[in-house]
Image 1 (cartoon, rainbow, N blue to C red):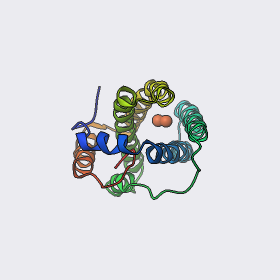
Image 2 (cartoon, rainbow, N blue to C red; image 1 turned 45 degrees about the vertical axis):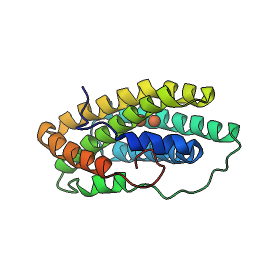
Image 3 (cartoon, helix red, strand yellow; image 1 turned 180 degrees about the vertical axis):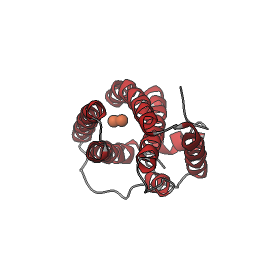
Image 4 (cartoon, helix red, strand yellow; image 1 turned 45 degrees about the horizontal axis):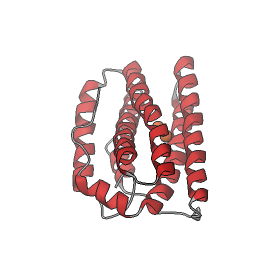
Amino acid sequence: MNPLRCPSPDRWLERALSDVDTLLLDHAHCEKKAASTMLALVFRTPEMELSGALSRMAREELTHFEMALRELRRRGLPYVKLTPSAYAGRLAAACRKRPEPDALLDAFVAGSLIEARSCERIGLLAGAIEDRHLRAFYQALHPAEERHHLLLLDAAARFGDPAPRLAQLAEIEAAIVTEGEDLVRMHA
Ligand SMILES: [Fe+2]
Ligand SMILES: [Fe+2]
């Protein structure tokens, strides 16, 4: 099932393809952030089985980070800081911070939406990028991101009925990507 309320605007892909070097650098930072977010969720999760699944996911995101670093190296690009897009911060601002388990449910729902958007955009890049190495990189990531968004939605359901918050947060996510940002970023 696809939780996204709208497809990415065409201008996102056009902008991404106009500067794949910056996109790749941002992508490396996103994979690192995804690993960190999953580890933070391990600390907040009271359940053993779910903690194990999140730990595996954190390791997988670190593997993606290392794959992105390899692509940066192959292209001779420096690994430098980059201002992130406002996307994740705006979505986090819409999540409840207390009490538990509501806050945890929101964190998993928002995480699922972010993974679903990553998955959609990685699929678009895999079908459009000319460089065969980069295309293979995005093709290799796609199935994992598909699994991730389903795992997080499944996790959310352990802490309540995710449907009402999924409906609300998916609307907010769609408004953020429809508005867009004048930046080359995975989540602009
Ligand atoms: Fe990833
Ligand atoms: Fe992921």
